[in-house]
Image (cartoon, rainbow, N blue to C red):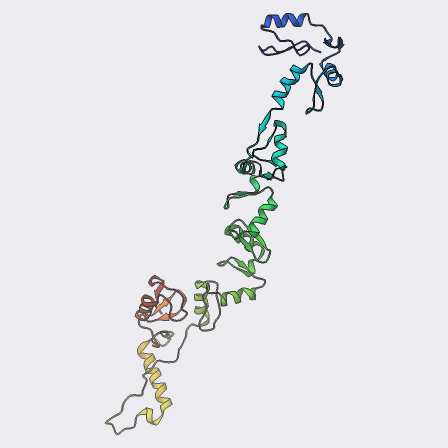
Amino acid sequence: MSSVQTFTPTSKCKICEKTFPSRLEYDRHLENHPRKVPCKPCNKLFRDQYFLDEHYRGSPNHPNCPRCANRGFFNKRTLRDHWLVEHPEIRCSCGAKMYKDQLAGHLFASSHHPVCRACKMGFDKEEDYEQHLVEDHADSRCESCERGFETHEALTEHWASSPAHTRCDLCELGFPNDFVLKEHLDSEHADSTCDQCLRAFKSKEELVEHWKVSVDHPNCDICRRGFANNTALQEHTATEHLPFNHPVWRPLSPPSTAGSDTPSLWEVDPARAFLSTNESTRALSNPNTNAPSMHCRICHRPACKELTMTCCGHFFCYQCILNEVEQRGRCAACNIALLPFALFKADF
């Protein structure tokens, strides 16, 4: 065995375990040290420290440590020193007493301590376990719930089962937030997804039916179709229902002919009188005969006074719809909620 050793005030000679108060005495000791390692109690010499340790372990003249696979020691004092350093008795926070080297096994097996099954490790406190998840399982942490999981599979199961997270009804997959769900829907179910409700449907037909029955989507009160949003409804109204010639608004009774001997057109030819009134009213209300006639959905005038359109695509007289919105806060045609700034004066 090499005789070169680093000196510290507490160092022992690795061959004979003798200590020295000064570097000078230590060096002199090494100069005179025998080449073979002796066991003085047994009066034997060994080639190096390894064989001496094997002698300690197997000899009945030397004490062994029962907790270190029968490691042997020079005498009872050195065994006691080893025992105090390596096997001190400690008390766990749960109250159990044990040797220091038993603590890890106790934490893993005890029901009083949190355990990471993935790493097969136990922890003294919940805070220690959470810190372990942050440091060693960062890729399986739910940031919105501030919870860590031992595996990514456990994290995805949490997303799918937690009411705090959105999920795809078709795939039964959960997602950390609406943004990630939207990406999934756009990628996997683009043709049958309601962007507003973040829901996927089995077919385009089911999506259209959803728009029709859902209170979150506007309906056309003329053809009863549902639409994704008000913009889509307005586009539909502009292309499918304009120009819209509603039955003409006219007086509730024919003009009076009292005091006249000449029979009125209403008496001679009521149908012709009706058409004549229709044309007169249309001409007065809308001199431009090529322009569409927009009727008010409240007072039923054939041509609205200060034609005003709502964001849901219906036409009214400005004062009619303004009064309705101020009193009820809703569209008189489709009953969706409206505010005054959602009214638009039109110029046709």
